[in-house]
Length: 186
Image (cartoon, rainbow, N blue to C red; front, side, top):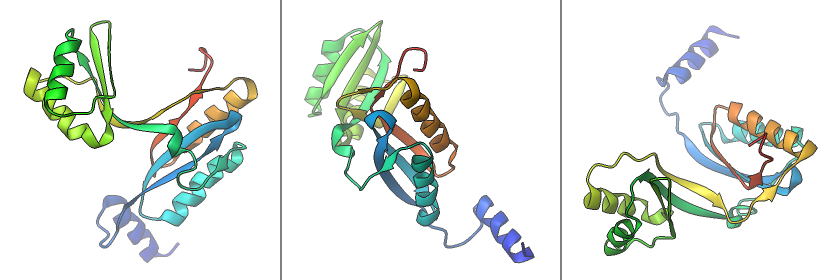
């Protein structure tokens, strides 16, 4: 490796390299057992990232698909979870702010709110306005599967291998899936 190549690699790693642009890329496909998988990446080299993600799919007997091939099987939701006991007051505050609440769950002194991802900021602000400072346990946008797929035996082991391989890639930001794993693997 030349001295220039080493210096370029160091500058890239420290963020000193000018002109480096990152882009968000989403890959979709099917894991062993027919599990739908969405992989969100942030990369400065889409060709490298595609090769890395495709390699993970190939080595685990999975199939990478075209954009939209599995995302239609997920709901893109804003999710907020916090300590609270008055589900009615939360619903009222969100409805007054014109938030299209998908679902509210109350369990063990925690309230979890599900809303469309497009209402994330409006929902969060409505909660803060109504209840003051809230310590959110969950405050994020996720893909939630509309249906889960039970995975067992060899498929479960191969699926976990896929997840581990994807999570080891630097460019992978999030992996969403529809797998329902046995209790000892969950």
